[in-house]
Image (tube, rainbow, N blue to C red; front, side):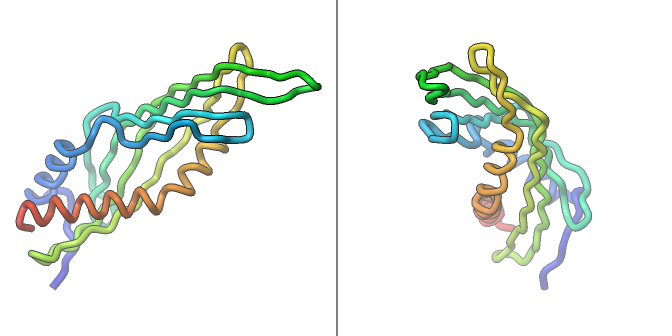
Length: 163
């Protein structure tokens, strides 16, 4: 029989500790990607310690992240080639709502990710480009992939822990 658990159990604390221990510094990376303005590199780093709290159906993991985006604006503008170096750097928290369905040795986890993107700009040699909509679209496109990857990693940790 499967049951949902709350963040106050020893098992949850163990899972959070395992997740913290197994979370890599580099969480996501793209290089030489094309977009409307030229090309960019995109890096998401872990920027702090994973913490947890109670969520409606399980636990909420909070993971501070640092997002670094850099690249080039490479466009023709009024018949002139414009080439600008660009960079943006900001921090935010990523929230992972995790529901554990414990049924050893076949325990599973459901994961919901939310990444609030603040108003943020790409600074390009004096030009300031708003990139919040672009980043929100990127999160929307990648969210299911990220949730599946995290779900699989949690299930591996559960199996390794005999849970």
